[in-house]
Image (tube, rainbow over all chains, first blue to last red):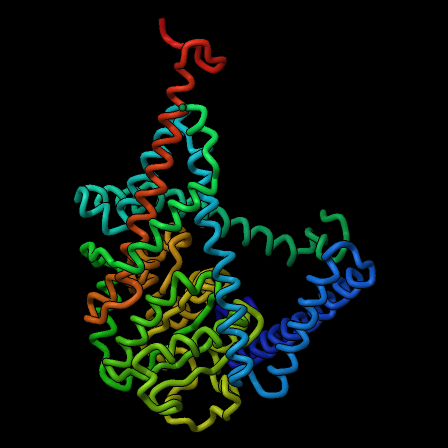
Length: 192
Length: 279
């Protein structure tokens, strides 16, 4: 795979693509395995019948079976499948995600306190970035977007680049350890 | 009074945040919209493409992130449709293609011909590996589209074998695989221009790619969507959403300031265990 990435020699590229295709197939099978595991876990919960757990697990299994049957039989662009996806799944997941906004507001009120110089810098920076990213910030003072962008483009960028370069070097080191046989934990061993 | 405020019921905070979001959505204020340079550069790039140029849009998001991304994605699709560009859709999140169907139905592509002007190829599992495999042979990895029709020979795919044959790739992204994976596997090695519609929480991580020109442009969250809507002259949810976001940010900042004032006052209150007060 690595050689296929760096060289344009045709047999090498073909071999690399074959391995890649295997990867796609294996990940598709992994999805099936995940479903089997999910069914086993929830069937066990139903059989135990504790409090309301059996009801939630039952609902999950009915939804899983119903959507899978619809998708396999009629395809994911089918009207009924689309209806359940658009009317139940999408708003449900979006609601869960949106609720974090409310928790953040409550947590910020209780925990975002100026206790030392570092927390003061953090709070002021957060205020500039927040107001710099919304129309009302610019309407209040032209400096909010300017300084908010500077915070993103200079201190944030420096920190992010440092982390990305560090993670990249770590990835190369980790890859070399696997290729050279030093790292064996993925085989169930204890490593070096 | 201070104690009462300090122990304020969290439901009051939830109510204030809810009202600060709901009222501007129902009655938009019309705050001025500014267009960021990263959004303007994407607009200019797309505007410079000749008609029928193929553009790949990958919906790499779940419904959780789509709420924030939908207005930007629809604004982008509207621009592509206005310019009569070929839209080739796909997704590397299992939910991506279904969300793309919804976005296409709410865009100007609704009035165009499926299979000739646009297509939704569907989903391939395997994350980053799948992106790389698809990039090398698109039709082989998508023998059928999202609706189950054969993709071989459809007019929208004419002249397209690999990702090198498209003029722009845009990932509507809220996680992994997303922008970084696309750049690593396609943007950089195949030298294909890349852009993204991105959730706000990922903007700091992706700014290095933008500054290094590995991304031609970006529609960052709702602010980017509002800016893009202004550029294409089609005000929609992004614009009214920006009012709601403005007021809710103000509400959160108000609570942060209030929390700090209460904390400072209780620390300096005579007899307080925390501060002891000033004599």
